[in-house]
Amino acid sequence: MSKVTVTTTKKREVIDITDTITSALAGSEDGIVNVFVAHTTAAVTVMDLDPGTDLDFLDALAGLLPDVDWRHPHDPAHTPDHILASIIG
Image (cartoon, rainbow, N blue to C red):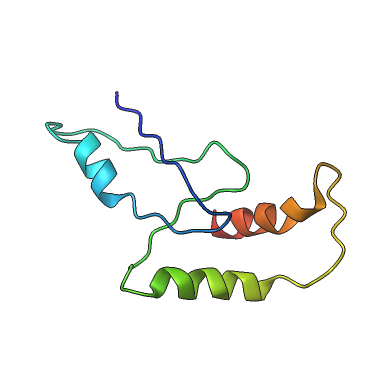
């Protein structure tokens, strides 16, 4: 079994993991691939990443959230990140 770790460098970013997953599967003939995120403010989705699509996606998601005083007890600034991760899946 292979484990892949992806490290982010920004608060919000899209990272294409296609090549990373493909490399982790090198030499495999059959089986199941399970890709998941262990953190509640991150998500995995499938999309076509033409140039600029990542930024369009992030802008569209940001536009879904109202500018309100969030009540999340841990850190209200994290609330939008939890909501977006839930929307993306």
